[in-house]
Image (tube, rainbow, N blue to C red; front, side, top):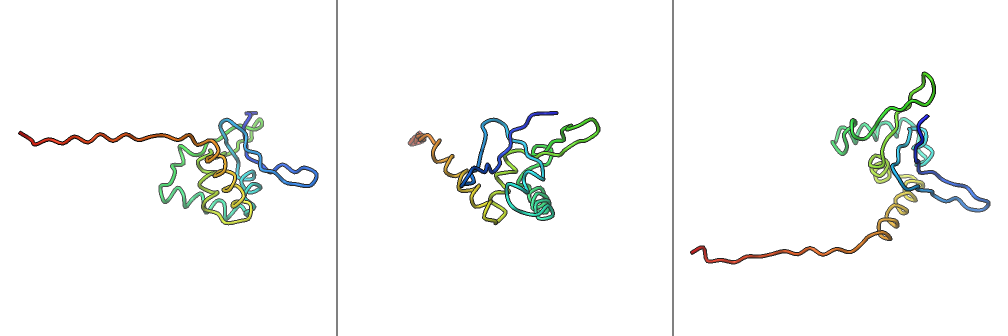
Length: 123
């Protein structure tokens, strides 16, 4: 069985916390349903729409892994997870979006863009 990193809700005594591990993230449909608080048909339709609109390509965004002797599981990468977080609208997706945005802002390093303009008379 292949080890994977997944985003999940961790429940402690009085609070629920979103855990986003470092490393590559690959999540199954059932894990995405739990994360976003949606039903499987809604999740599948949204993923199909992402493919149809060309937001992401299936051959880049999903893969099939072996979980047991004759059992296989389709998993989706972090790009799909992020796209779903912005396409779906539940309390959980809003919380995931907020956490993702906070992490991006917290880890953002400023950068400069230097533009060079050249003027000439053409002579």
